[in-house]
Structures are given as structure tokens and as C-alpha cells.
Image 1 (spheres, one colour):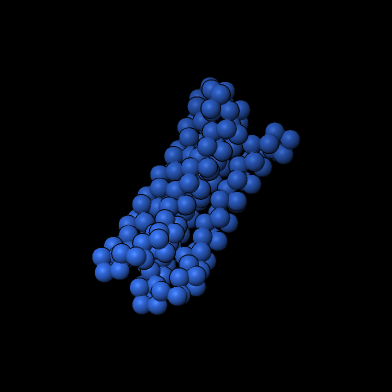
Image 2 (image 1 turned 30 degrees about the horizontal axis):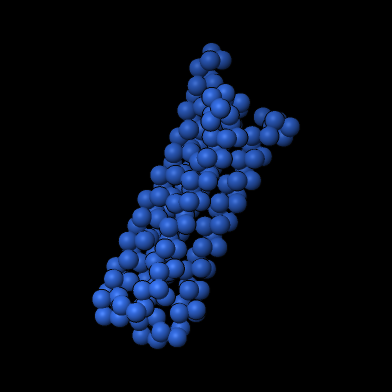
Length: 168
């Protein structure tokens, strides 16, 4: 395979991985916030004073979109794509594609489940306002795995793009 073609394939795969991370993460966040919003709107229509207590649970599923965005930007930064200078091999491009896909899927799924957990917490607060602190733990537990996926993605990107560590 021609070297220029190989470079373009690697670059395209890395860009696709970044796009998948961001696209999947943001789609999941939108869906998760939608789920929590439906629950919150029902409660707030009858108890508008609970808006402040429900706002955090409503917003939590949105963090996955930001984590996915960080992953995409990390891929662009660590491969030189932002500076316009691709600095990685084809195999690195392939690996970054799968890192982006994996992080994106993890953010997509956890955002939706976090929306469901937030909706459950919102229902609890609607019935027992004093339980808002405990209710926040439900979506926070799901957040743990979104953060784990982000950290795994960041570490993978750093390791894959460190010229001193590349042996393949």
C-alpha cells in the first residue's frame, strides 16, 4: 500500500473514532436528559418549588456528552490533527477508531441509564422531599462508569499516541 494512502486511511479512522465518541455521547445525553425532563416536568407541574432540588438530577445525564467531547478533542490533539500535522501510524488510527467507538458507546448507554436513574430519583423526591440527597445517589452511581470510560479513553489515547511507547 502506498504510504500517502496509508496515512490518509489512518487519519480517516482516527477522525471517525473521534466523531463516533462525540456523536454517540451527545445522543445518549440528549436521550437521558429527555427521560429525566419528562419525570421532572410532571413533578414540577404540581410542585414548582422542587425545581431547584430536581435540577441537578435533570442535568446529570448531560455530562456524558462532555466526556465524549473531551475524548474527541484528545484524539485530535494527540495525533496532531488540530495543528494539521498527522503524527500517528495507520495502526494507531485503527486503534483510535476503536477507542472512540468504545468510549462513545459507554457514554451513550450510561447517559440513558442515568436518565432512568434520575427519573427514579425525581419520583422519590416528589413523594418524599427530604430524600433529595439520597435520590441523587442513584444517578451518581451510574456516573461512576461514565467517568471510568472517560479515563480509560484518555489513558488509551495518551498511550497510543506516545511515540516512545509505540512498538507496533
